[in-house]
Length: 610
Image (cartoon, rainbow, N blue to C red; front, side, top):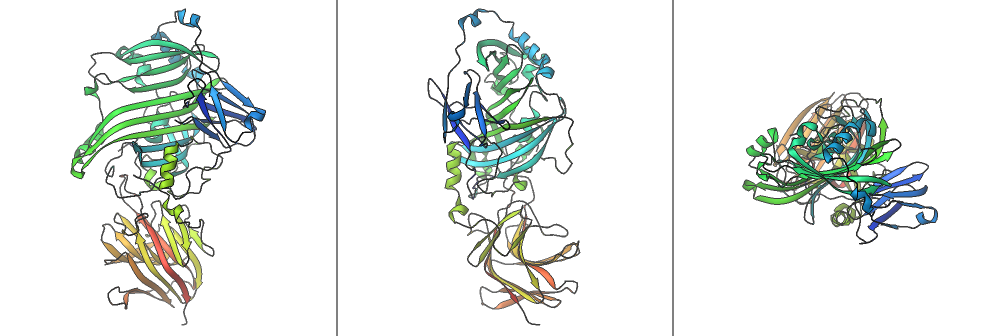
């Protein structure tokens, strides 16, 4: 599927959004209602921009602002400077722009003429590819007040061409995704999202929507609905809808057109309510897959908005937004739900070409959001990056689900320990319990490497722990998807090839729990599995010279049971010892992401006499 997939139902263990440095709310001066989509631009040592959210709130991570300019179509701009910026939180009132009566009496050209002029002026009004946009992205799925998923990221996007498939390529800078908070089967087979690729591949500089194309204009009715203002310039509001009696479902919306430059400064289009019986909800491979899985996927509403602001002589992307209301039915799983999907992108900075092309490995693939973004981060995750402030309902939802934070676990790697592949996992310590939580796909197999919390050891050694492997939130439930195991490891770090012995517990391809012993020699792994009915088990891994012994304590007899002995004369005296995690869930469905918490209770490392 070409659509983006990621986790369903989430929790963030720490606050999602750090304290902003310059923040406020923008209200309509007459109604005192919040104004969304307002462009907020700060001037100081450098320009800093953002947009207001649906509650009219904004934030800029800049303490050295000399002035703040607030602009929105249909409102008189506001400029704040000096003492006005010293308040902890600003309240800004925007006055609606009143269109002069004479402006409406002047007969403008036909709306079709204005649209043709706007299309012809695109090379003059906007940057021509190639160029690069750095943008903040958020994607949310919710049903009324219940949030089912959230993901955020900063991307670099290279817009390379003006036509053809995928004119833009994306590269992830950093991001984070939601975590599963309870068992659900919603979206495990199919995800409705459009994602950052959709938003960047449909900007005006790269791809014109049909209602702006000459060959499709005969399918639409256009009208000049009114004249308003933006940045002191007259702006035409051109409405459009599909013609009656068409045997296809097209678009309706509004084009905001600068009357002087013919620049499109904002455009919004939604699926028309005409001829909805011809609406295509899924097509191609997506439809085939949905039919095979017994999914009935109905798009109730779909709306896209792009806004631009002037920077110097040209206009640049300010923000973009995609909203879909969908009805998702899968009778065999008793699913019948309606959801709202929201994707929004805030352009942070635009750089003209020539560009240094992204490497093949850097190019963002549409199905990576599940496996490539962490679900844990500190409250200052975004640092100095400007973001679209989250709505209060989203902030409250995250706070109410903040289970790991509620546990008051110290953050960072425990004292005296090192975390290998720290980008793949988080490590915690509570008293004598060590915890390792993988949050992206990673594995210890052959030459692959995963997360490993370790200390150096020398010579004969015993590792001991009362091991527990479970799902992240429901620690009474064992992992039951893919290959998710955790346990004790002794590893050599003296060779370029991978050499280790791994003694672990978890699921290996099906929900049945297994004890896993893995012997990896020069990047080639031999794996032995033993069926077990417990996700909590006391185990030990001993080294006596070249002999490695793996034992577990029988819950029934309370006696040590030898599982395996391994001869490794190649292992050096100095090794790394600790807790390792293997988290690999094949497939791209939204639930196919690691959900594994490894706890080593009473963990100890003991030096043994020969």
